[in-house]
Length: 514
Ligand code: MCA
Ligand code: AMP
Image (cartoon, rainbow, N blue to C red; front, side):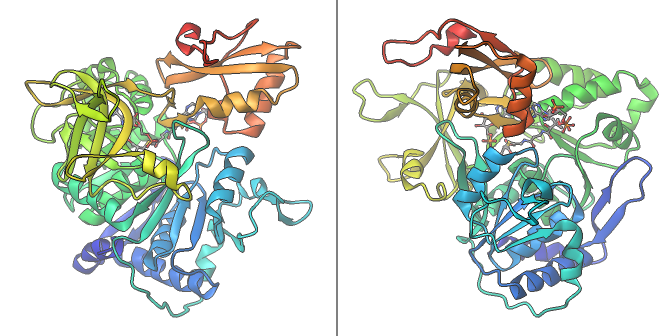
């Protein structure tokens, strides 16, 4: 079975039902696509891409913002077994060069506004750092013309073990790695969530999350399509626009990262009780991708009467644990394993011969197994092997790197942090090493350490400690960082120090900097 087999069911049962409604602002008219129109467009585009030489197994990088064209292109690519590689639109040269060089895509799909980041306008050609594999750069704005060519689609067999997506994730070591996600793996998360969250065809999901992450693409779009529901797709989150939309009562479900809930609470504070009452049409507010502060959970409940359902997932695993849809949702907890998911909490054995389960209530590393777990990292067999632990029965468990504890009475899991120094800011991963490597390339900086600092809105933000031979102008340094990598990675502060505290092995003692 592949993803299209699942999406084919609502297409056959409710062809004229609205699958996707896209609006760019509160007063803009929606662009609406029925199930039939959406999938027919994807099929025509698939034929056009095939006619341009794209084949099953070849990669197509997506560097574009949310739009109906993005959805159609994704459904087209996956239709005949080509592989999507979504990229964060805030990425700049250093991230793009790494990802594109690693996945060697045949095509890149991008928006006209982002094209200058890939193509040198003066030379009229792709930047010289783009890999030679790139045969075509297609604009989302021009995909409709390809759709209209009505080429014939030749469908190869696409089965569950075929790759659907390679999603790059800032791992805990080294540069970002491409998690290989098969159709089966994505199907496992979708079918688990359809059951666990009681998805209905009558649902209307307000989707403001980017489609370049699992949260927006799989938890949001895929579930809504598989349920035969309607996705109200937006370009991005905008506190003012989203508040208006939620208060008009047109949605039933809303998924977000904690930063979005913090901002929504600010926006709702200016609204009257009577206006907020309109939220009673909502049936589900979910949070994930980063820890939801119990204060935010509670403030949202008091303000809206809704109890946020917090769940836990990863790019490598899709969704793992969730508070119950029917049953107590506990602040600071991520609930119980989803259908088909197994979870263990382990620690290293004293004799260093592997890992063993901790007692209930104790803290250890969370391991996950199930059909939702990924197939390994692209081009990295060693990193893939290290990501798993095999138990006595030969079952492979994915090492999440997250510290967890299971409550002895309720069995609910709580997360207590990460084993490695990954920073999660507003739901985006930031790997300190990447920033440190960039900083020491700046004239006058000899050494650098980057640490995540608690932040009321973003959850965490990066700050840098730098050792300098010449003290830099902070504004220039900040601008330089933003020119070289995504701006959300730019340190919020630069602390100039004489030296970094290191242990005997030379490792920086980051807890001392914190
Ligand atoms: C934007 N900025 C940020 C972030 N986003 N800074 C820190 N952290 C961020 N996450 C900065 C920009 O760099 C820019 O800075 C300024 O904010 C304004 O940018 P803008 O694009 O207007 O920001 P925004 O639209 O307000 O974005 C905030 C956001 C966004 C809506 C919270 O970050 C977002 O959509 N986050 C969700 C990410 C997500 O879906 N993660 C799921 C991955 P300057 O002006 O200085 O240049 S995890 C996952 O998928 C797993 C499976 C899971 O469990 O879900
Ligand atoms: P990513 O690599 O972008 O898929 O992010 C996955 C990481 O996000 C996980 O390993 C967790 O550290 C974190 N995460 C996701 N959901 C939650 C949650 N509900 N609470 C705390 N951390 C979370």
